[in-house]
Length: 114
Length: 115
Image (cartoon, rainbow over all chains, first blue to last red; front, top):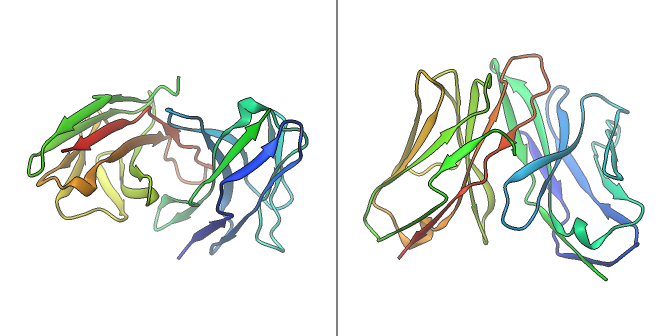
């Protein structure tokens, strides 16, 4: 079945450091890929998405590129801020049997220190 | 605000009891998903409904059940509660139309504490 593997945290960075959170996936067909973010005490919210190979999703300074050849969708940000401290989830969605199936990774906790 | 509402926000109950969690999806969304999030298990997919019909089951215990009503709201019923059922329960909704990359919109969650 479909699966998403992302690096386990926590990841601790200083403010203005470069961020990479790795995500790889296994899926049949051509899934769409997502990054969701969960701030403390809140539900998950969409950060960015990409729907086909070589697409780049971007939002709030975060970027991720859909790499079909390496089945990856790594999240990057050039300069993190304290306000970026949250849990980040990689996910894929694929249509199977006439409906969408969504698979989430385990989540990576990011802590940014001043 | 995602447009997905969940009630109640907090629920404290005792072992062996039964509770019902409620979710109202965003206007126009036909798919509803339920997730359980605990510290040691991460985000676990429980069940998905589309337009009133069950579409997918994840790691949902037999003590748990759900349904989606004609007005598209959904309820998650948890019975014979155990201490280990203490968790955050999220509902998410999406448009659900086939052929469309489907973003899920999450509610704020219900925090269940079983004492």
